[in-house]
Image (cartoon, rainbow, N blue to C red; front, side):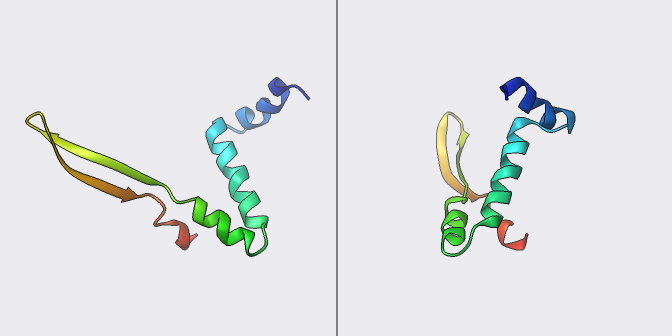
Length: 73
């Protein structure tokens, strides 16, 4: 099957490729058995590091965890 035909399905559904691939990854992780399932969930953690600048000088670095909501699914 060509990639053009495969992409039509997620485009017709009104999804971006990123949303489609994240949905597929969630389904694969949900189908895993232990201990592979817990190992996959550990790798899912996403952090964002940002530094606020004031008057041309870097301030304090802030580390944000975007996966706090994962346990509540």
